[in-house]
Length: 429
Image (cartoon, rainbow, N blue to C red; front, side, top):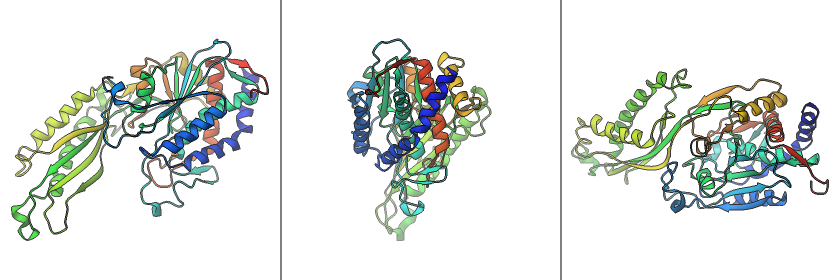
């Protein structure tokens, strides 16, 4: 494929400015949870304009709630559909493929902490800035651009391909799951998440939960006879830090995690409580997240958290008789390990070497990835492999454009080998 590889990579290069413009247009569409509708219409229109059959997949709790990969849906769940665009070849000759990326982004935080408006994407040297630039709109558009590059030289995949733009990746993983339940499967999948041009070998699972604490409100002049729920929340947090430490101590027993100092991260991402500065707080709610290891059953780990709080707070003067309430309200997701040496991985090894002029490295990540849907429940190799990014979920999120170019080239080369190619007329391209 040497000569063909050179043609494909040259096509990626020739189309790259148009690819950046498409990526910027998508970044400019805010797509936080339940606000992805406009961005999904953009994706649907862009994919339909390329001749793909486009369908919407709702994240329907009735359809997926009995699935073992389901995560609890809260009132904040997205009502936007996932988008699936399908390419069918003239003659089915190669192996099928899913190109998956998520459209949802996390909240941007105070705008004054950004150099520029987070949804006004800007370039500075090799970096493209904006909320969602790295996580993961550049990767999502790279999937489209890889197919565009092939079409520009009169070629298309000789196999079925589904391009998926999914919702709910940042909170439940139910968008990708709904697509699978709807029947969209393939012989391999690629998710170009921002993983520094490495292939993810192993990935933590994640639990989301709310801890609700009831206090005893009194006027602050009598604070000593009341019970401040916000103060109590600090003690609950300290208790949860103990289970975080205990689970981190288990790392040596888990392959691919034994070299990490802190694979299990607990986080209080949001806290609210109280009603009045001069009233001892009557309530407090904390939104929490913690990781679990591959192989861990989310239900077992969830029960362990609840049992730990009951036992650890048994001596607390107030919480012992007024225990916090735990509600599981998002990710209830297993971690996964990608089997080594699959044909899909070897194909990516060759594609990456040709595009990046460097060997493909692997890594373990303690964050959530939709790859678990494909690996655990779809029984397919899922190659999570994407560009170098910085400050994802932070201020001035950015993605390396040179890295995006290499990733796009590698995806295009992977498609060429994995799916095979067939010629199309210039007018079709």
